[in-house]
Length: 98
Image 1 (cartoon, rainbow, N blue to C red):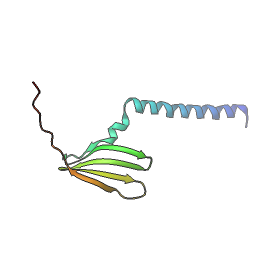
Image 2: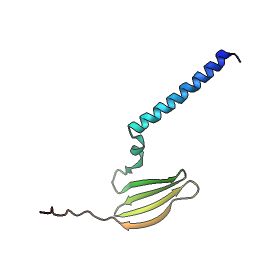
Image 3: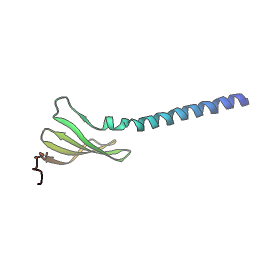
Image 4: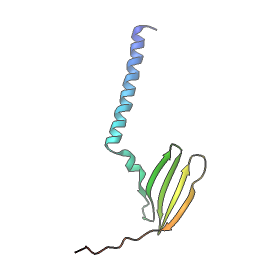
Protein backbone atom coordinates (compact mmCIF):
# COMPACT_ATOMS: atom_id res chain seq x y z
CA UNK A 1 0.00 0.00 0.00
CA UNK A 2 1.39 3.36 -0.95
CA UNK A 3 1.20 6.53 1.09
CA UNK A 4 -1.36 7.96 -1.34
CA UNK A 5 -3.76 5.07 -0.70
CA UNK A 6 -3.36 5.42 3.07
CA UNK A 7 -4.14 9.15 2.81
CA UNK A 8 -7.22 8.36 0.69
CA UNK A 9 -8.48 5.85 3.29
CA UNK A 10 -7.88 8.23 6.18
CA UNK A 11 -9.52 11.08 4.27
CA UNK A 12 -12.56 8.93 3.44
CA UNK A 13 -12.88 7.86 7.07
CA UNK A 14 -12.66 11.48 8.23
CA UNK A 15 -15.30 12.51 5.68
CA UNK A 16 -17.74 9.78 6.78
CA UNK A 17 -17.21 10.57 10.47
CA UNK A 18 -17.75 14.26 9.76
CA UNK A 19 -21.00 13.54 7.92
CA UNK A 20 -22.29 11.39 10.79
CA UNK A 21 -21.35 14.08 13.30
CA UNK A 22 -22.99 16.81 11.21
CA UNK A 23 -26.21 14.84 10.79
CA UNK A 24 -26.37 14.16 14.53
CA UNK A 25 -26.06 17.90 15.24
CA UNK A 26 -28.79 18.62 12.70
CA UNK A 27 -31.06 15.99 14.26
CA UNK A 28 -30.58 17.55 17.70
CA UNK A 29 -31.16 21.05 16.39
CA UNK A 30 -34.50 20.22 14.76
CA UNK A 31 -35.39 17.89 17.67
CA UNK A 32 -36.18 14.95 15.45
CA UNK A 33 -36.50 12.53 18.39
CA UNK A 34 -39.51 14.40 19.80
CA UNK A 35 -41.38 13.90 16.54
CA UNK A 36 -41.31 10.14 17.09
CA UNK A 37 -41.94 10.07 20.84
CA UNK A 38 -45.57 11.13 20.90
CA UNK A 39 -48.17 9.82 18.57
CA UNK A 40 -51.93 9.50 18.47
CA UNK A 41 -54.35 7.47 16.43
CA UNK A 42 -56.61 9.07 13.86
CA UNK A 43 -59.66 8.58 16.08
CA UNK A 44 -57.92 10.06 19.13
CA UNK A 45 -58.79 7.09 21.37
CA UNK A 46 -55.25 5.74 21.58
CA UNK A 47 -52.20 7.91 22.26
CA UNK A 48 -48.71 7.61 23.68
CA UNK A 49 -48.57 10.33 26.32
CA UNK A 50 -44.97 10.02 27.52
CA UNK A 51 -41.87 7.84 27.06
CA UNK A 52 -39.04 7.31 29.53
CA UNK A 53 -35.93 5.46 28.34
CA UNK A 54 -34.66 3.47 31.33
CA UNK A 55 -31.70 1.93 29.49
CA UNK A 56 -30.97 0.87 25.90
CA UNK A 57 -33.27 -2.17 26.18
CA UNK A 58 -36.09 -0.90 28.43
CA UNK A 59 -38.70 1.84 27.98
CA UNK A 60 -41.52 3.01 30.21
CA UNK A 61 -44.59 4.34 28.35
CA UNK A 62 -47.73 6.12 29.47
CA UNK A 63 -50.50 5.24 27.04
CA UNK A 64 -54.00 6.77 27.01
CA UNK A 65 -56.71 4.45 25.73
CA UNK A 66 -60.24 5.89 25.81
CA UNK A 67 -60.66 7.02 29.45
CA UNK A 68 -57.75 5.05 30.95
CA UNK A 69 -54.03 5.68 31.40
CA UNK A 70 -51.81 2.59 31.27
CA UNK A 71 -48.18 2.38 32.36
CA UNK A 72 -46.30 -0.10 30.16
CA UNK A 73 -42.81 -1.53 30.53
CA UNK A 74 -41.35 -2.48 27.13
CA UNK A 75 -38.16 -4.50 26.78
CA UNK A 76 -36.36 -6.20 23.92
CA UNK A 77 -36.53 -9.69 25.43
CA UNK A 78 -40.10 -9.85 26.73
CA UNK A 79 -43.54 -8.62 25.67
CA UNK A 80 -45.03 -5.43 27.09
CA UNK A 81 -45.97 -5.57 30.77
CA UNK A 82 -48.85 -3.48 32.14
CA UNK A 83 -47.63 -2.05 35.42
CA UNK A 84 -50.60 0.14 36.35
CA UNK A 85 -53.90 1.44 34.99
CA UNK A 86 -56.01 4.33 36.20
CA UNK A 87 -58.82 6.53 34.89
CA UNK A 88 -57.89 9.76 33.13
CA UNK A 89 -58.27 12.75 35.45
CA UNK A 90 -60.49 15.23 33.65
CA UNK A 91 -59.32 18.83 33.90
CA UNK A 92 -61.90 21.18 35.29
CA UNK A 93 -61.60 24.91 34.86
CA UNK A 94 -60.93 26.66 38.12
CA UNK A 95 -62.18 30.17 38.72
CA UNK A 96 -59.52 32.85 38.71
CA UNK A 97 -58.61 34.06 42.21
CA UNK A 98 -59.71 37.62 42.76
